Every structure is written in C-alpha cells, then in structure tokens.
Image 1 (cartoon, rainbow, N blue to C red):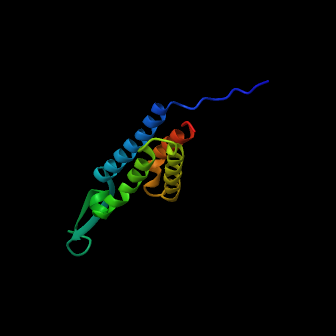
Image 2: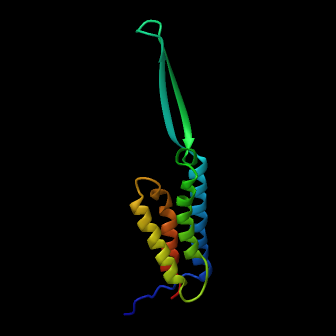
Image 3: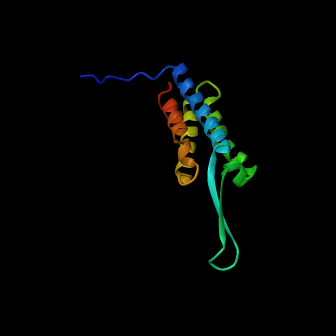
Length: 136
C-alpha cells in the first residue's frame, strides 16, 4: 500500500495568492480610512424649565481618519508591509517568507481582533495557504 503524495501548487498559483493578500490589505486599509466607522450623538436644550424648552439632537458620522487623525495611516500600512514581505521575491526562501508573513499577520489579527484585526484575517489565510502550498 502506498500513500498518495500531494503535489505542491504551482509557483504561479501561490504567487497569485500572495498578491491577493497584498490587494486585500490595501483594500481594507483604504476602506477603513474612507468609510464612516464611528457615530457621535450630541444633545442640547434651550430654555429654562420643562415648558417651552427645545431639545436639539445632532448625529455625525466620522471616518477612522477623521476620528484618530493622520497617525492611523501608519498603523494601517503595517499589514500592507507584512503582506508585501510575503509576496515579493522568488527563490528558495519564498515558502518560509510567506509562512512567516502569514503567521505574523495571523498573530496581529488575533491580538487586534476587537478592533481592526478581524478585517485582515483573509489576508493572513491567503499568505499561509500560499506558503504551505508552495514548493519546497
């Protein structure tokens, strides 16, 4: 009885997966910067006493960039740089580099799961798959 040995995926397929991870991190970063992610509500009343007073409620939606400032751009670039480290290059170390980049991104996703980390899970999965299915 012999066991069937699975072939690794082609270099082209694993390269496409790695670049898909980069595209995902860029798309998520841009979406988090542009899409409103927070809501603030304010209330004000005019007048004295319970009669004749008017309550004005205002609601505003702000993006992550508006709420946190320009410093958040550097934070959103970190997953892009990690994914690029896994996608760039060829050679004997590409498999280890993709697995390492996917592992770093997966740990970051786990640590930041309550905030932004959950959005980057697909990129981590793509990089890990690209690394584990690459030729040795």
